[in-house]
Amino acid sequence: VILTGTCECGAQLTREQADGFGAHLLNDAPFLCSACSKKREAAWATQDREDQDRRDRDRLVAKCETLPTALRRFRLADLEIAGRENALDASRRWAAGELQGLVLLGPIGVGKTTIAAATDIDYMAAHLNSSSPRWISTTLALSDLSRSFSNPDRERTIEALTGKGTPLILDDIDKAKPNVFAAEQLFCAIDGCIAHDRPLLVTTNLMPSGLAVNWPKPYGQAIASRLAGHCELHKVTGRDRRLRRAA
Ligand SMILES: Nc1ncnc2c1ncn2[C@@H]1O[C@H](COP(=O)(O)OP(=O)(O)O)[C@@H](O)[C@H]1O
Ligand SMILES: [Mg+2]
Ligand SMILES: [Zn+2]
Image (spheres, rainbow, N blue to C red):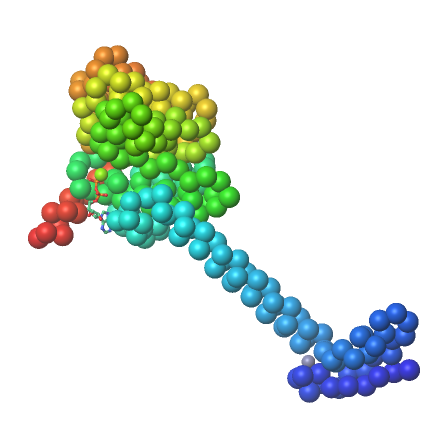
């Protein structure tokens, strides 16, 4: 028996009547021409993709809570490129998991911290199913490390510095004048990154060799040589954005 019917687009269609188990479901199904059926599948696929994108965006927003609020604004693609092509290219590779060690070097206010934060966010977006990088403001970490033994901030900082499964970002590593204990912790963190293939991103005002001068022996020298040996080093140049904004 041949059934006839009309598709939603108006096309006249025929099909053979089904029999056997579930036949009434097939026979009651609306007539749909192959063009309309393709269109419908494409719409479903788009819908699925949009749902997935929305879920991914929500997860990224949740992950960004590991960053200080003021640093959640930019992705790498939002940043101005001129004068910092190499730094941004290396940051993009770090975010993609292609580069294990990166030092962003440059004067105060050029945007090193901003690039590092955008790199962190891009990394999280590219690794939604992995743990987020540990963002460490070095000044804050050193003050946490100088607290008393059972202090929870001190514990948390040591845990963040030594945790293995997550990338480590040390912002402004040169700002600190650490005591021996803190210098040792930072050295162990950096050395651990190299030993355990833990991605490392560092921002600094000083060449790594400049750290050696300020830091207790032998840690300054040891950190400088680890950074120099393990990381790509890129200069971030440009005007001081803080001054420009004030102007
Ligand atoms: N690409 C950018 N677009 C807009 N503002 C920026 C950009 N890069 C940096 N800034 C702003 O300039 C200031 C200094 O940037 P920051 O990343 O802290 O510099 P650095 O870490 O090199 O000292 C901050 O207030 C930051 O928000
Ligand atoms: Mg900074
Ligand atoms: Zn149709």
